[in-house]
Image (tube, rainbow, N blue to C red; front, side, top):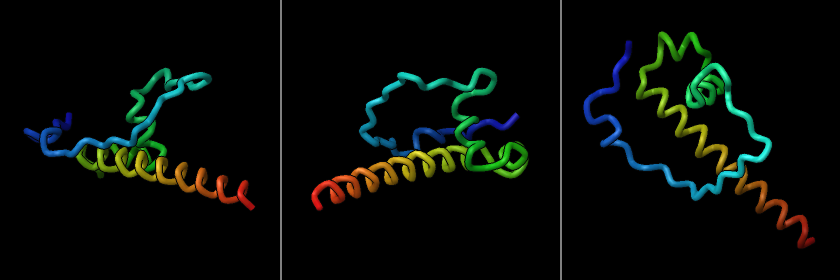
Length: 85
């Protein structure tokens, strides 16, 4: 079992994307933890199990969250620009 290093979370800066969660129609993974399911979208389970540490998994999750947030912001900006034309 991999344990997080002492003070691991204390050393990480909070990720505040200002999200308002709308869960209408969103389903959760019924058999795996949500964070593992999200991480598996970006790295194979065998790598999460054998190659990456817990710290690496949180880095993967942070990257996924920031990338998703930024993609949504760019899409909204493009939509506004399209409407203005």
